[in-house]
Length: 255
Image 1 (tube, rainbow, N blue to C red):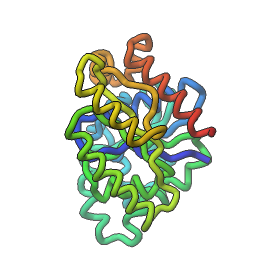
Image 2: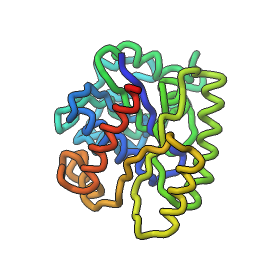
Image 3: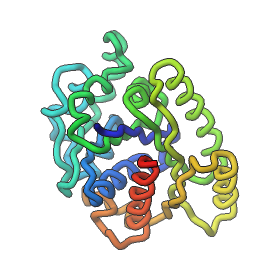
Image 4: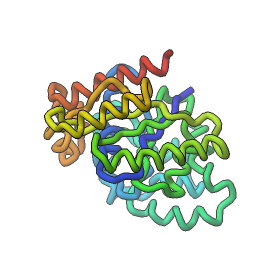
């Protein structure tokens, strides 16, 4: 049965989608069966996997409303190594429509139960807000991976997210836990980045992944080609870091 992880942070531009796409591709490279769930109306993860969101007639939007099953909507990523449950701007309307539905915070969880035996990992790319969509992701997941930059304002946002995770754990999903914090876009030449990194290690201990994801232009270029960075340039520093992160995460789950 699949391990289901949210990649979440309510702060925008912290590398959630880059992390989700590259982690999915990296896990697939080590023979893991992976489904990437794009839960962000921007559809960036969908595009980053080589799927044209503007041509999609059926997406996760219809899945959340109970009109289609995941099995009928999922697609292969362009690199062919993992599956994608795609999204586009239509998903923004789901927030309003789900308000009147029964069991609204568990719509995604119920939909994914039909495919959990098909995968080893299901990765959910959450939108940059603590919204009904993000809540659906948290209620579906066994754990949360939090990508964050090592800068001052990131610490403030982190405390809000951790408190939200605690509330969801207490009231809606007893399986939910923080799997780990991933330091992304890390530049060791910046003193503040080193200081914040050390603070995270002191405060969160072994919840901080050892792998550091560096700033890397090849990771930034890859989405314009509809490819994960680990497929676009496997020898780049960013790709090697995500490959190391995937291995570290699998080892952590096995413990």
